[in-house]
Length: 216
Image (cartoon, rainbow, N blue to C red):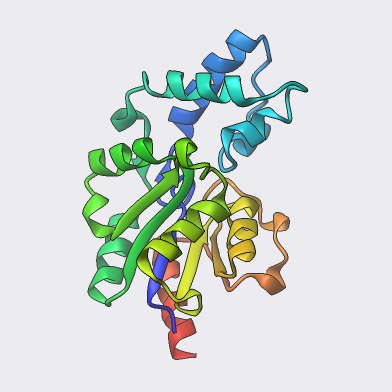
């Protein structure tokens, strides 16, 4: 039975495209790299920034990842991030249904906390976990494992809700099932449907399908 719902952030709870594209645009300008076309730039959202940058350069991406976060810290996080329609209602109903909610994101943890606070939904989450470079906690699997370890969660009672293959890969490495939302930044063809707990087209579908697993 699922008792703990662990959400990815970008593409799952929030549409962060305006914010992230703005930061990458500024960074790529400095690096003299052209910004990807509209369809391809969706791939910028989801993986850790160093993973993304390694696809564009042959040198160590770490200094550019640091610069990315420096630029990110100058952006108006409140105006460039928005909750997907139906997310506040989903978080409220899941809480009322007795689930514990968490965030596990590859985004730097301090930025994740700020954004969810600005959007007035931080109180729904038992904990908000993200990348912590000083702890060598940057991959999805390490962030997710930290949530599980710190709160003593039973993996059989957890599900990660995400939108990209990076969410699925991280959850699989840890041993947690994955529910995938189709309104985010991933592509459905990226997934082996037989290994996904469910696909959800809307936040409303997320609640319904979690309930279906528990009642199945």
